[in-house]
Image 1: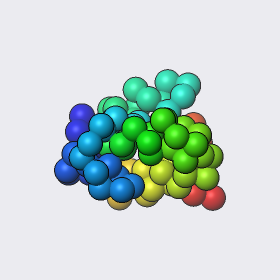
Image 2: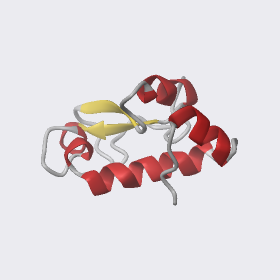
Image 3: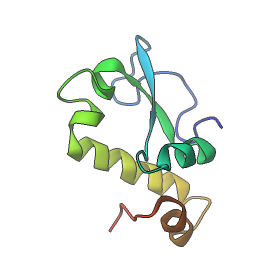
Image 4: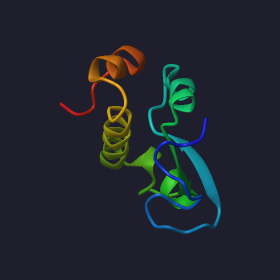
Length: 93
């Protein structure tokens, strides 16, 4: 499924269109597959993904912010209970 978060293929954080990676917002423990199914994915440049200390995979605060944003997007069309059943956690409380 396409992203429900982004329409354009550019880094979600800095806007570049260079060296992009697809990032599944909710990852680990099978949740990557669920992120794919529900469109909870964004484009990130290599630096903002996993090729720097400030990339989402190396910055717990940024990772949480992206998970919270993804949950908010999901909850525009689903309930919090559905999110928690599918992804096993609530990132907003």
